[in-house]
Each structure stands twice: as C-alpha cells, then as structure tokens.
Length: 173
Image 1 (tube, helix red, strand yellow):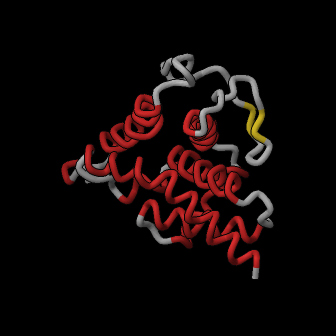
Image 2: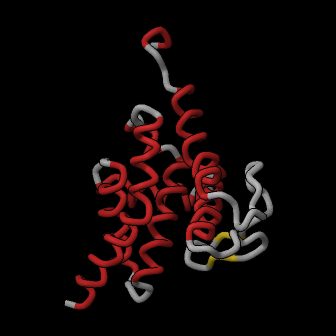
Image 3: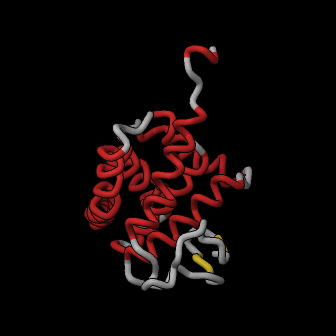
C-alpha cells in the first residue's frame, strides 16, 4: 500500500517539476508535434527529468514501480500514450543511442540547475549510469548554475525547433 502512495507522490512531483516548462514551450512554440516526443534526444531528456524528479521525491521505489511512475508522468507531461515510452527507453539505452545519451546528460544538467546544485561537470549520476562531461551546448553554467530559462531553451526548445525543421512536408512525400 505504501508503494502505491509513494508512486503517486513521485509521479506528481515529476509532473509538477517538468510540466510547467513544457506548457510554456508549447505556448511559445505554438504547439509541439507528437512525433517530437519519441525522438531519441527527447526520450532521453524528458525520461531522465522524470526519473530524477521522481527519485528525488521517492528514492525507495523498486524498478517496476519506477517504470510505472515514468510511464504515467511521461503521459501526463507529453500527452502521449504511456505504453509507448518504457520500451523506447529500454531500446535506446541498449542501443547506446548518442542522441538519447545526450538528452540524458542535458537533463541531468538542467535538473541540477533546477535544484540549485552544480550541473555536474565530471560527476556521475548513478541512477541513469551516465558520466556528465563539460559540454553544455554553449550555455554558461557558471552564472549561478546557469539561467533556467536559457538552459531550457537550449536543451528543450532548440531541439523541438530542430525537429520541426526536419519533419517531412507534403512536398517531401
């Protein structure tokens, strides 16, 4: 029974931490195409943010419970079906997708700034198994830990814009 309560609290914490940023971007960018959410970078970025926020709220969840939290929070944040994301995360992780791993690293940096902690140049985040390198996509992380708006823009909105420019048009079909 306590696991169900902890799962609910972890999901709510993840959604409360991430959804306001996504909603602001949706408004600023006049929407986000559904296809963007399954882009390997976005799967890594949003999936890792969900995991970090959920673990911060309830670190004692077992693997299966965390998987359910991830799927439900993902659905709440993106509007996508929850059954799509678990398999995609496993596949991209096992395939060692560079875009997925970059999304994970950028999420760790953003979450560090969100929590007021150094973004982790050279540190390790054991929950996702990634070493954080010094590349911050040109965002100054020294002012203290970077500006959240600038980080979000660089790590999320810039990628949505890049994805948008790569979507096929009717003329491409």
